[in-house]
Length: 230
Image (cartoon, rainbow, N blue to C red; front, side):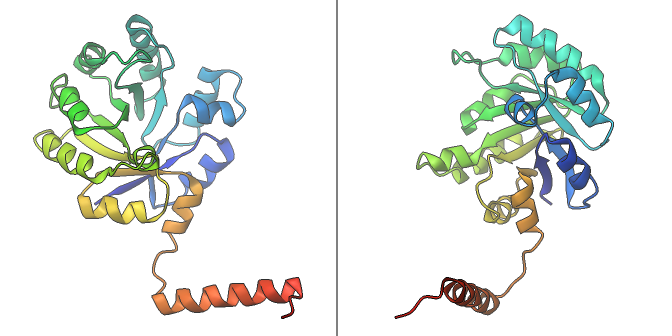
């Protein structure tokens, strides 16, 4: 069963979506936290943890290996439900396998982010144990934005991860509600989506006929409001 996580950092939205049964966890990143108006990263993240005890990912923003490890060791202390989010490579494209291995060996729950290929998934799996929880976030939407099909990467990644019960493959950078259906069909463990997408997922179920009538009514209402004449 594919779990739904909410990708958000706004405090009000987290309070709202934390109460939803459909939402099983949260993901954040420095960009979302900045957009939410945070001035103190640590303080803001700790305020979020006062709201929810569901799994939540907080990302490091260092770029060199030593500082990534330092930040990860701080973040993991914030709460038992915290996953430390680290990129699969740094900004220079250097694979962070040794960082992943070191943090994983210390039983730090990780969310490996910015993954695009099954080959990257395979490299990650070579650097982890089979006990400590690890999420591998594959950026499906950003792949699709560039004309690339993410599905084959998920299929192969899921095959590689099959032997690791502690590993969850996550569908990231969601672009439309139908991505949830795709995730379920593939057997992806988690999909993380913004609030607007989750609300649309919750309204799944209309028939094609109902959609037709709803669409026609919408056109009719807009044309009357516009006082169009032919």
